[in-house]
Amino acid sequence: GGIAISVNDLIKILENVIGKRVKRKNMEKQRGDVGNTLADTSKAKDLLGWKPKTSINVGAGKYVKWYIETSPYKNMIDTAPGTSLNGS
Image (cartoon, rainbow, N blue to C red; front, side, top):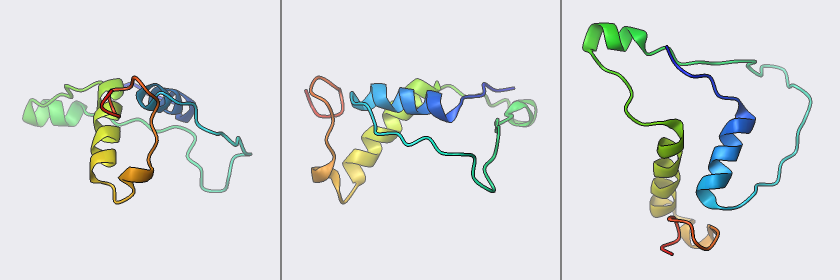
């Protein structure tokens, strides 16, 4: 099993992580767009005894922090004051 998350919900999570709102441009569905996707980890649980330990909120924060730290553009990335991402 797993938990489905919409693109809009993921954007909201990332906005919370960086402390800023992103500029959005909603468009008509494009050819090749996937309506829904969901990772099913039940086989990994059954065969390996593995289950995810990190929530999407925590994982998104870790990913963004890693990206900022390793990006060649890190000096150009602006996060909001008071977020854990900018050292405040």
